[in-house]
Length: 165
Image (cartoon, rainbow, N blue to C red; front, side, top):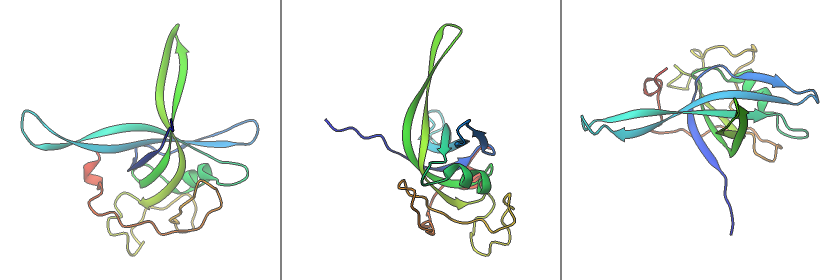
């Protein structure tokens, strides 16, 4: 029987990414991410957004993609992004009790728009990235041999007002 482990998310970063470097020179960017699920409130009958908080890891790979570097250079808290990846079960022991949590390991990240850049047009109102160069819109395929693409316009996607932070 075949298996499939694929996650596709559009949401916002809940905090600035945090970088960790390994002794072998590898890097990982830890990303706090949130997406909204809509549900009907049984008491009021109104639709409401319920955030889902997700931990995402983006790695630099040798040879190939450098997702951790891209995330650290261009994404900040509040930025809207598309993340495609796969689930990983993180397991550890604390006080003699086994603990576990599902995380997403990113395979593809597309930068959609920073918070407050609703038009996405002139670029003059964008918050500054860590570098002085303009923020690119990049698609990094899982193969790691990338091409630069402009992401699709997402009609009816979440806006800054939809996210509770």
